Image (cartoon, rainbow, N blue to C red):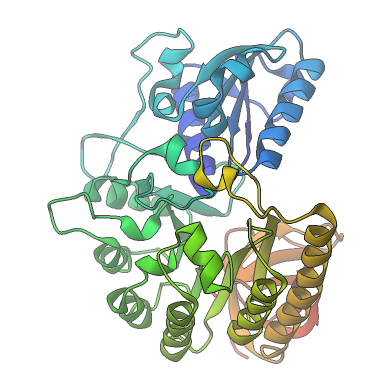
Amino acid sequence: MKKVYFRTLGCKVNQYETQSMREQFLRAGFESTEDARRADLMVVNTCTVTQEADRKSRVLIRRLSRENSRASIAVTGCYATQNAEELERLPGVRFVIPNLGKEKIVESIGLKPEACCSNPDPFLGETVPGISRFADRTRAFVKIQDGCDHACTYCKIVLARGASKSRPFFQIMSEVKRLVAAGYREIVLAGIQLGAYGNDLSDGNDLVRILGNLSRVPGLGRIRLSSIDPSDVTPELIASMKNGSKICPHFHLPLQSGDDGVLKKMRRAYRIARYREIVTALRDALPDFSLTTDVMVGFPGETEQAFENTIEILKAIRPLKVHIFPFSPRKGTPAASFPGRVSGKILESRIGRLQAICLNLAQDFQRQFIGRTMEILAEGESSRPGWQIGHTANYLGVHFASDRSFSGEILRVKLKESRIGYMLGEIVSDSE
């Protein structure tokens, strides 16, 4: 039996699409392997959000080719969609498949077309696209939307993914029910512009309706949203979170900059006052609400004052985690030719200062939960023998001592201590 190996870079949508491709190959008679050296085919699902993401893809492909020179490499994802010729020149690469080709990747590499991209659906009695499991995960990602209708001046993803496209409502519901039946207690809804779900549909379905219907799925413990643009957060969405006991009180809400002038140059669809209003509304509606966010440092024209404005807003909104990354000029985007590029030394200094501040903010946020008993989804062993890891509904990472695995179960844990990046806790019995 031929063996296929997968590696994924980038977002939750990419991770979902890798699982979809894995199931296509399994139905075509392949065996999935975690050892690249045993593979007959290696599939690399790439990201192109930054120059560093491109570089990581190239490094990975070259390394895989060295480790297993007899295997063919198929490269797909956003980098493959935008830079096919560049990837075709790399060693071992035999197939370069754009994002639109993922749904029929088995056919794209020359296998029989009857190896289709659908699962027999036990709930609707018909064949629909989707996945039936999520390899090596205790929570399952479900892609409900693709593409983006925004036009941020720095972003290349819209070039690789196109305009927003929503999956049919019945496909999403069917897939979630299938995953819950397979034992998944938490579902993460994923999309490139998640909040745009339904904008291109004529049946009245939108993200709020999806959440309402999923909340009634028996056996589903949690519903989590992946990254959502601030401009897509509506009062109706906040109300649905407040009224839906299964919806996790956590948003990844990209900030990018704390300066209105920079946001305007980025062509972001909100300003700082509106961002603060959204966070305040979420905290008012959800007492345990936690915020994670993205911040870009060194966008062309970012002054010291603009950077200080970013620090000020972060201190005000008190995020749990901040993904900090430098501006990366992407070919084909307007910002690639903007004047006022921030020098390397200044960029490095700003990133270092921001990292220290965000570390303290995370510690401050975590400490308020010390002594609380909260539910976590156990996710397996930590790097320390005898310890397990998991996350609360509001995305606090928790390490707890246990000699047996509770992976995939929802447990009650008392939070005892705050550490850098996680908390220590202990299991609480049902009688306590």
